[in-house]
Image (tube, rainbow, N blue to C red; front, side, top):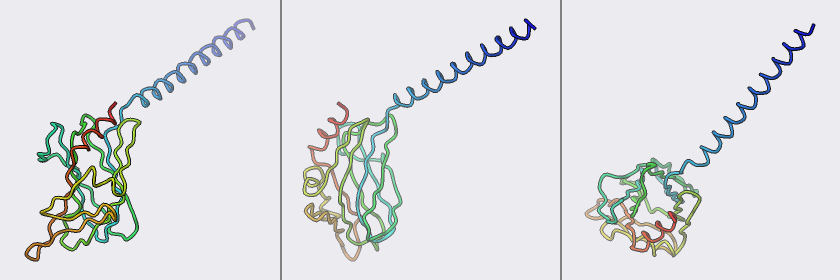
Length: 180
């Protein structure tokens, strides 16, 4: 009889100790998840009537010599405002951003409502006329009216140019604020 009680106590002890270890593991996993740094993210809020592809290009060297470093996203055409997220690779922190708004020749004007920059726990939303302080149109490919958000592609010799918005110098300062 005494052995049965000892056996039950021994079994209960191991159950309790085993449960404590499992809860510790879960709290360690939660702490690790909190310490994971979110990558730099750019969200565009826009409306575009035709299915198309947008691209976010970036540099890390302080220049605006955009090369191959870009993230392409397919978008669905709609008159309703929508958004597209561009997440940069985890190890990348940009110094400049360029926004390419479509490559389809049938695409009409695009209305850009907001550009949202996110890094770690900080967010910077750029809207309305403020967009012109941070981005300028590539005059060879489009016009940009920041009061309405309309990005209008230029047509040369019957061919629609692919609109791009280049960074103004103040954008780099705003990006750096997100890292502080």
